[in-house]
Image (cartoon, rainbow, N blue to C red):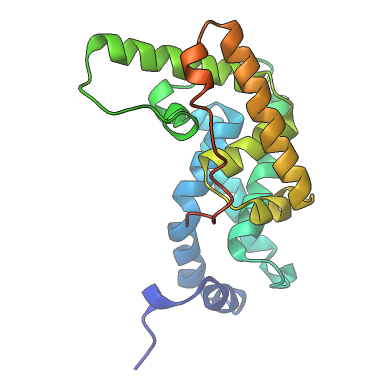
Length: 210
């Protein structure tokens, strides 16, 4: 009996795709497409551009499968392609693109806030915090911003982030620390001292959250 496609590992799917199995590559797109698209949206800040980047990332991965040596996981490989394409696209944009706060996914990932009933005041407060975070993220360098988004928003382990970004785990740890410090300083300058203390623990140390 043929093995169920749904239980195949990424490596099995890559091997099948390299042999010409289009359905196998389609399964890889299904597995990682939403996360690749979300990462591109965080880095590019324009949904149309980000969706184009995500699509291009998979096209390039499919075209380069013959050169994929398997020393890294498919996950880190497609993420590396996505980060590079996203940063290139972001540099090419002449104006900053608007991002819907609800789609940014930043406040819930970077700030631990207690639960409770949602009222108009709370919604306005959350929007203010999220917008401030977006503004302060824009002020970070490419390296700091990409690292923080990978580790603290997407939940990628620091070791995997290092492979994706082409640097050492120590550099990733420093970038996360430095990015958080600058975010704290920026938020404090905006009068959001109550948020500063909630920018705590790094989420990427325990695993990739896949």
